Image (cartoon, rainbow, N blue to C red; front, side, top):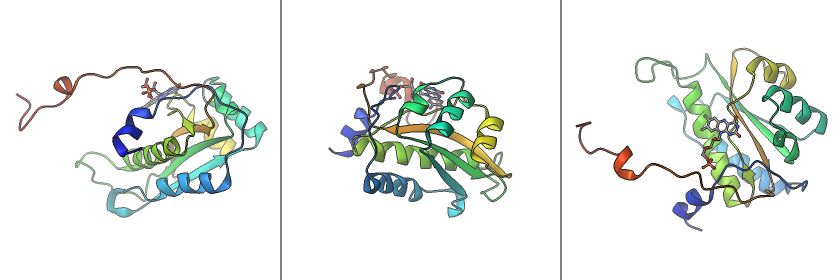
Length: 172
Ligand SMILES: Cc1cc2nc3c(=O)[nH]c(=O)nc-3n(C[C@H](O)[C@H](O)[C@H](O)COP(=O)(O)O)c2cc1C
């Protein structure tokens, strides 16, 4: 599968088999996240892998009742140190959310390559996730994903056409 086929194959997966992820696969997927770029190469992230069934159930509650979080073999949360990041991103923001998002996207694409399913989870209560996973300040939780063998293909949710989203040289 080439990179374009891989990008097309990835879908949000919201149903999982109760099958364990092989250790070597898990390590390859996590390593893809580790290799992601970050502002000034600070790499201020932690990837928290949760496999304990009770803890995953707690995450369901912290993720607005999204039950498939506990179905998958693992849940992964990305936390990024809000203070030790590039502070001048675009001259108006810090890069913690960008760094975390790129790393999680690397993980998600690698997981797709390994035949594993994921689903970006942005609907979560940061305070609850922080407490469950004991994430210290000044780390901020950027996103989570279930990670496991898919029990569905996922649906083609469609995308805008290239014409609608690309301009050349200037906006007009
Ligand atoms: C920032 C962000 C937050 C999201 N939060 C959730 C979520 O909490 N729960 C969920 O089921 N899907 C969530 N999604 C997945 C999107 O709904 C999904 O990516 C989009 O509908 C396109 O579908 P696809 O991923 O299958 O291509 C989120 C995606 C992004 C990028």
